[in-house]
Figure 1 (tube, each protein chain N blue to C red):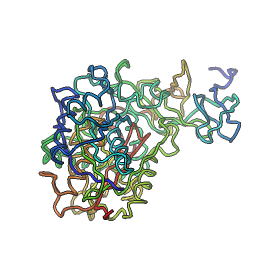
Figure 2 (tube, chains in turn blue, cyan; figure 1 turned 60 degrees about the horizontal axis):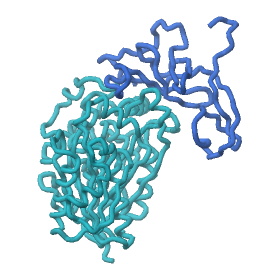
Figure 3 (tube, chains in turn cyan, blue; figure 1 turned 30 degrees about the horizontal axis):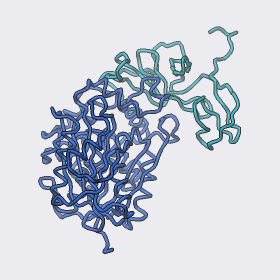
Figure 4 (cartoon, rainbow over the protein chains, first blue to last red; figure 1 turned 60 degrees about the vertical axis):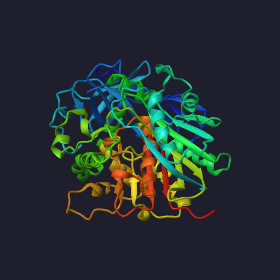
Length: 127
Length: 378
């Protein structure tokens, strides 16, 4: 990304019946049940709430597999596939992208390793 | 409700060579023996993963024939890992409503013939499609819930191993349990990672097994005093609180209102400890512990007064085993046996009079609470 690149955004929808903005999904607004909605974009920057590494993923997924719960602007949460080998700490800023309906996230910064968690027995007691 | 649990039956849980029908029949026959072969006019089966792959689709019809309970009505219930609880509640409503006199309810599951990744995949099909799409699994999401919970209540971390230690200690007295040997705190804390902060011994094991109860119209020591169930969004990301299960809170509210008893009057409970931290969360959601205080039920001896409530005398999901469709029935079978005084080796001293079973479907997407106790004369 260069300074001239446009900020990364994600497609979202705004409910026409209430103030809720949410990521596209089948079905009605998760808050009010309204079905009318309009397209919206939201920043792709998010903050990690929790992350883990699955030693035994479901059949069809390579092991290990990492997932994270992240929070976008406006409190919108989404479960993502974590894209790098080390898990992020809660609070770490990340960038979310979507391809084929699957959300993935990676560190928003240069990726020097700060704020990432080891996945061995030294898992910190504060998490 | 005008309905009570008259008898309980189990198969042994664990790795079993028998098929699903055999396990379900074993538990069903054991429960029927408890009512002297009185006629059954309703058969309800709780089952999650689908038996079609074993060549036994239409499970309820095959079981009716094997058990000789025809002519009877019947149906199969799927509420994921709460299928058994849902089956009991649906049968209780049908019996108390007057349409049926006596119901046999069986919860059954066969899992150990599948590889761990395949079981993991099948269990994950109950999760939200958007979360399945990124490779979420049940232990994975449970780990995220646990991280959020421990971040809010870090002092609870030390209780997690104790949940498993106590579960295995209780299971050692249960002849039907998957695990009959105790474990130490060190063994729990040194078991391999499944999904940090969850280790292997924090997680209920893959298991085969079945449990059954007979429900009768009328009243007894294990009368159904209150039932409740509620939904939450299947996607973890859609929940405003990812540290607790709102569906348990609502199910408990529904169950306690008509039961006309307080939380303090519940003397024994079987709670859904599929993952050790869920035991703490369950107690808080049920309202028997303040938020963040579920760990006090699992504190070291002498550190704090231990609450009088007896938890998971059967060993719970961690100790007895968690054949997913069977667990909800197994919980109610155990609680009712405790109240009737015929729990055998797991019978608690002091003969408890009121008990509770709490079951989680999926990752808290549909949860159930059932309260049993002495009923009033009709």
